[in-house]
Image (cartoon, rainbow, N blue to C red):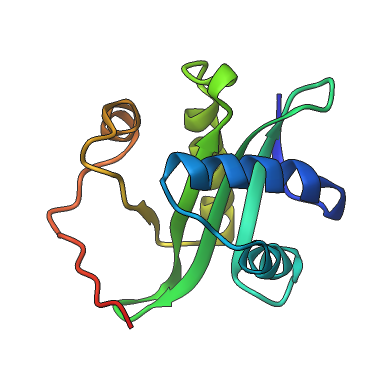
Length: 146
């Protein structure tokens, strides 16, 4: 399996995984919003990026979307892992863990301060992995819809 940054040719595979991820999350994302997200990922000037895990035969197995941004408590950048999705038929094979490790290695090379992400409290499978690879933040997330 190869884990790498997406390339323009990955658009259709990324979009297929993205749509399944959104459906799993119970979120209906209009196609024009998905197009905007892809344009951000593809644009080297933005801080929105994506990794894919690709099987040697070319099948795309997983995606990981992330945003790199400044932090007020450091001169180093932070990385927010926004979305991580592994195709249903490829789950529980270490792909998510490998993708997170790949991103962490990349971040170390780039000098980032840390990776962070949110997890649904009820997602026991994901939380089992996250408890293994990271420490749980003592902070709660609050949102104001605008």
